[in-house]
View 1 (tube, rainbow, N blue to C red):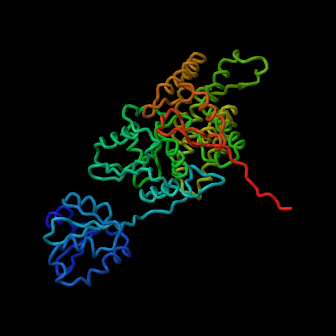
View 2 (cartoon, rainbow, N blue to C red):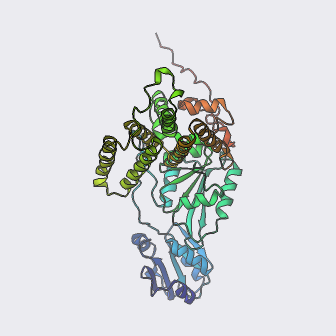
View 3 (tube, rainbow, N blue to C red):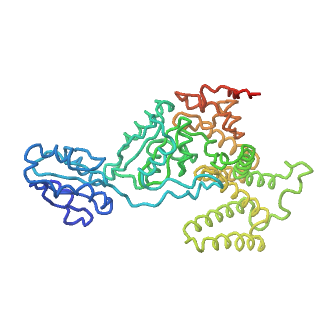
Length: 488
């Protein structure tokens, strides 16, 4: 007890509580963190302590208290000071009894947090409105609610020498490839850092070393439990970090970043249309402005029927610089909107879109077509479901734009080829980033291009090498109903 008091310094830490008491004539102490426990649950657990007589605990004191007098479903024993400290600082209550070599850990945690509201980045017109929150146990419960399979595994790891952050690895044991699960678990166990203040983003960078300067994301983030459940059933692995509402899905391809729950909440024909609108928007966000700059600088590349494309007057500022200034202006407006209080965020967008854009064109700083195409590219960026992929496409667009401005047609070709080569060489935990395009898989590519009805989704993605590849095993045609003959 003296060592605990020295290391935890209860006198200086006002939120660390040491409640001394007598249990059955034995001196004891209750340790807990104020604000991380449920007072009501703790009162229910301890309500029988005053009734314990002084002679009842003379023999087998610890065993009697542990098995008979603590009315809680989550009680464990720990035997070292380090285990007591780690458990106690995570939120559970530690009960120490004088002259007993072990301590009792009673889990009556109640973390402060918000309700599981619908995430802002993944809204749907029709569907569930719950989303992951900052409490890990709540997020795992949302997964359990959707997948009641006893083979769903939720492994707990503790990461960070000082932060002791709770990390959960979720997978379905008889679906997910064991090599992928073992690789993820091993990489997380190898993390050697003092803490994870940025939660899941810190974990991502620590388990994907050597890819820091590749902007294309190797994991997909989601705040929707239905999306996470769907990927678990495909054979993916989910990583959840306490204090973060985002779950990491891995391994993934680029096409996973282009899917959205809205497609699967609508009729398949509507889902196909939504998906193709999204694909077109993503392509526009990537190459529209460099392509227009190329034909504006090299008008001879255009056929006679498209000669109207391009500015009649290039203006005082070179077109190349106009695009870069407009791109930076769009990013400035976006960042300013994020840091602006909600009631006036709309005003910030209006100022940027109308005053800056329109007035810049009127005074001749920008060609009107530049504003038009930069706005179209920005819409394509915002249309991309994955925020991480949208930012990667933005950097790729600026890269192609830079090469096009300096080298024109050779620069445009070089920029597109370099971006494609980067995508081809990118891998997410061993999975090719452009699958099923490269390596080519006709059946899987069809499901990527066309949102398939649920009834025809018979197999899981082959690239994940799932242990159980069949979604609908043993499907047989329904038997015709047998009606009793009508009596005459």
